[in-house]
Image 1: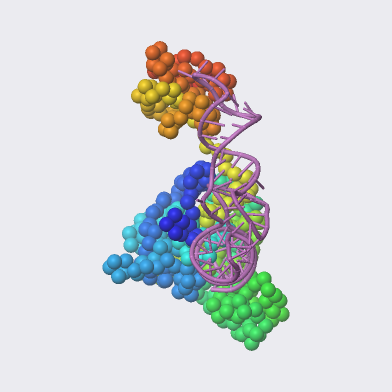
Image 2: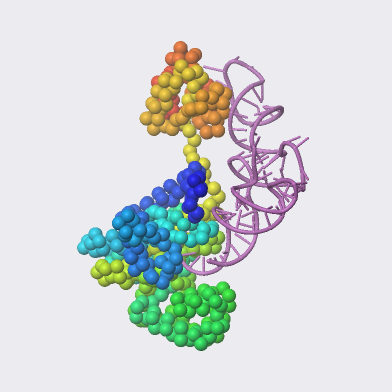
Amino acid sequence: MLTQRPRGTADIYGSAIAAWRALEEVVHATFRAYHYEEIRTPVFEHTELFERGVGETTDIVEKEMYTFLDRGERSLTLRPEGTAGVVRAYVENKLYAAPGAAKLYYIGPMFRYEKPQKGRERQFHQFGCEVLGSDDPAVDAEVIALNVDVLNRFGLAGLTVELNSVGCPVCRPEHRARMVAVLKPAAHRLCPDCQRRLDRNPLRIFDCKRGCREVLAELHAPSILDALCPDCRQHLAAVEALLTALAVPYVRNPHLVRGLDYYTRTAWEVTAPELGTVGGGGRYNGLVAEVGGPDTPGIGFAVGMERALLLRELQHGPWPAEPRLDLFVAVADPSATAAAMQMLQAVRQAGFTADRDYQGRGLKAQLKQADRLGARLVAILGGDELARGAATVKDMASGEQRDVPMDGVVDLLRRLADGAQI
RNA sequence: GUGAGUAUGGCGAAGUGGUUAACGCACCGGAUUGUGGCUCCGGCAUUCGUGGGUUCGAUUCCCACUACUCACCCCA
């Protein structure tokens, strides 16, 4: 146990880091282009925030939260998703007082107590955004376009936007009641999972893979799209028209249900054939009021970063190796240690990457190491060089070597960087 | 929460109820004095996830536990 990470967590290091940083850079650059501001909220919040904000009956709240008491007997929970914390911060800091809609994005770790499998961990990472203060369908369309754009910028292809409307407090309860009324008498014909869904989330039965859909068809169970109220219907139509205008390809999926209770109207998922869901989002017009703020419409999405990275690797293979080392300093004699360190520091401070051996290995082994590290140049420093006041500098690609004054190595590197030959 | 599979050196991977647990890669050292990539030679698991049991004897058989992987559920 002592040397084993907790289940469902990962150490991210080595060759994986480059891919992570690249993704993070794409995220920041994309949100900057759309004029979003980053917000960093705590990784833990009061448990009630998630209970209210995510929904008491969701899987997340019922069985997936990392909840603990702190020393002051407060119940705190490691955030299982990003929206609740951002909405809380929006209300607490009165960001609604600023003119216009608030456009916020976040990036960071989330925590859910789940059984790990491919693309699913207990500590995972999401980036996402929230737009608070506008009910304009143009915002829906822009946020969906942004959701796709950021993934495309990361090099992901073949993504599909699945789009649906889950209605609003006016039309959803009605639809739900009609579904239950139709299905309840036939409950015994549904699979055990769907019998539970009937009470919890009847819309999900449309997604059943075990034949329950046939029962739905036979009973003419109502589709949510047919049950939408005029306002919701109009909103959806406007969003679709704008997506088309933006050339964002999407498919309607009337069975798409977002897991969290706070969603209203627009709901979507971005999926990849290789992996399934990479990200998803929706509108949540009741959430801000639910957590005690002014009645404010909102919309947002989240993308699973592990999944984006996984997909990137499936589509393009392993991330290319890190850039090579500009200079390796081989210490051929301990008496040259100080001179070697001076050279290293000078080269590093000039903006190049440089390294040496710390194991006290022989010159041969140091050259071998330099080769493995992909060093462009190796500077050999020993008794001879000290006496001469010049390092023996070897070009590892050509094998040629020549004497270079101790303080001339930076200059040489600069010339090489400009394309000169050694 | 349900189901299935797997656990052998840094990594990959053979193997058998019984003296010294293959092999490949990596790593370390050497093959001329202070010089890499190729080649050659040598070194590198008192030990086979952990704990029990069966047995004269178990890494190989049984049980439990733990971890990992995959699927379901759900989701990112």
